[in-house]
Length: 304
Image (cartoon, rainbow, N blue to C red; front, side, top):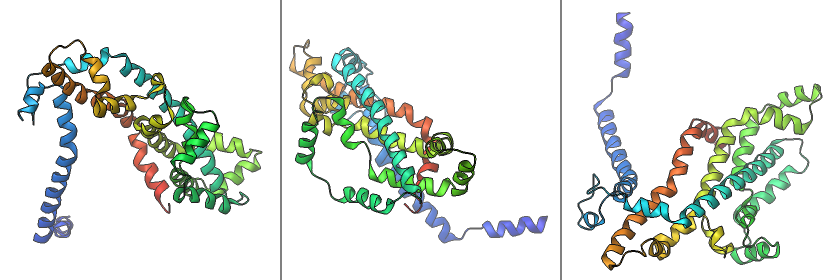
């Protein structure tokens, strides 16, 4: 026993070069972590701090002169709540459409008995490299009568080819053909096999697809900028963009303030606050799908 422990100790003994390599790795990872995390942390503490302290450079580790005025004005603005409602509707409906179409297309393409699947896959791949462009896509959406409707933000991007490839690879590696043969011997149809057997066994890839598409819909603003003219249909990200870039909403939120200095002060608080408000839903959802995320991406990414 003592010899075995001594042997294991010798096996795990690390050389001086290994220790230097570990120290350099830890140092580099720590720098990258600070570069990524600190800007996010600064936005959080800046949204609670007095803007004058931010201008003077006194806010860098902890909030100074705590204030909630920015958040109070954000939640009093009806546009923010309307944007929230629109973004939630677009995200939920869009994700259901995206995931349904993607999984059905991926499963069909994963079946070796699908006639012409190589040709269909080639046509899918073509769209990854060659698209119609902005103006032809706009004309198609316009001629379909989708302008100024939520479907303009959902249907043109109903299926992402890259996600189809990941899901197709997952089905090919995780659903054995013998399972299909056994189900068919029991009289199971293709549709019933997909709904009753394939989907329950594919929770990781379903969670990954839901996360990919939901994040895309929640953060999307460019499509709304192109296809929507009605402000009542604007998603939260487009309202956030107007606040951060054009200062449109912030001027309405601070219309009761008289001095220019007070308006600038509150505008800064609102800018930091809306970033936090727009990020909260995804931060809440992510922990619930995280346990499936790595497994789904790894299995779907193999041979992808």
